[in-house]
Amino acid sequence: MRNLSAEDLQQWLEEKHLVLSAQANLYSIQFLSQQILCLEKAIKQEVKLNKSFQNLISIPGIGNILAMTIMLEVGDIGRFAKVSNFTSYCRCAPSRRLSDGKSKGTENRKNGNRYLCWAFIEAAHSTRKYNQRFRNYYNRKVAQTNTSVATKALGNKLARICYCILRDKVPFREELLSH
Image (cartoon, rainbow, N blue to C red; front, side, top):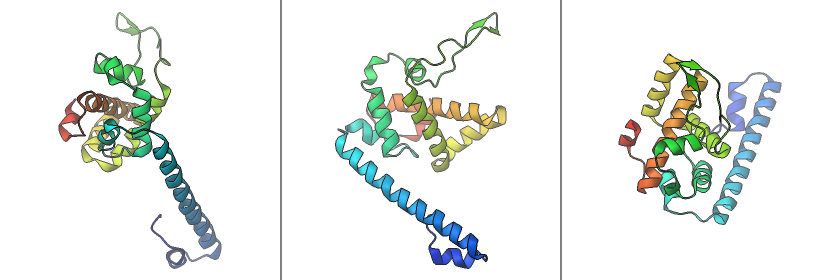
């Protein structure tokens, strides 16, 4: 849709009102895309980017805004002793309280950083489009459960990958998918 022109729409659609509606949508998409680029540019100029930003955008599907959000919200990765502490802080780990195998509630479900939670869910949606291995992982999870749980599981995997990238100060590598 983004690559279409107004003339392309007239060729595809027969009814005049549909062409006008599609053109209005196309112009809105073009305008908003332009505004998003301007905002990203302004934000990028204000934020002090470090090496971790470059490493985070090496992950397929994570762009400037998600990488900046993760970089800024995490801060010093050294404050997390283990990857499980990090995923819990990102609200990507399941929070359950069990007794004798039975669920007794979901304590501390809202503890952690809601912005990192949002960033990893958005990244999960995005990375599925750009990487076949992420898509395969998501599809396996969907086959076992529903799409919400599968998205959260992919977000958890991305949080684990980001932890390794930030801790080791390295760009994304395919072998990180096995974490």
